[in-house]
Structure formats: C-alpha cells, structure tokens
Image (cartoon, rainbow, N blue to C red; front, side, top):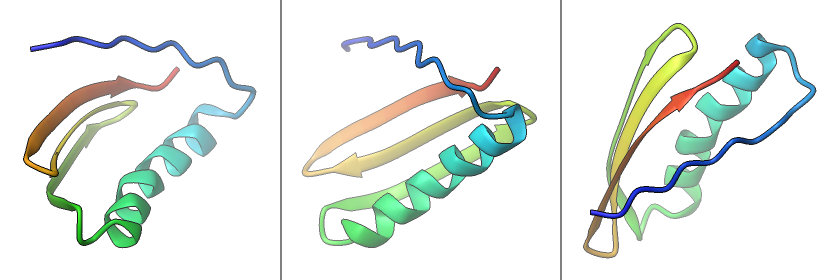
Length: 66
C-alpha cells in the first residue's frame, strides 16, 4: 500500500479549516456520485479519518488540522 503525506500551509483559523475540509468529502461525493461510494468520515476534534471507494480502489487516510 502506498503512503502519501502532505503538509498544506494555510492562513485560516483552525475552525474555518476544519469546516472547509469537512465539506470537501460531502461535496466530492455529491459531484462524483457515479464514481465514489462507501464514504466514511470520523472526527475527534482536529483529527479525522476518512475512507471511500473510487473506480475499484479503496482510499483511506487521516487528517490533522492545526
């Protein structure tokens, strides 16, 4: 399994960054409903985990918003 680590600097407050990221998966699922399925998202404060299937691939990861 391949690993990818990203560090994305931003100037948002932590609350605003969390809000934007949380909207991303639901918007992605809506826009790509024929491609993406089994979307799961769990949050514990600024730490999140996600998973979904896309074109036969299972994708999963974690997010930490600082």
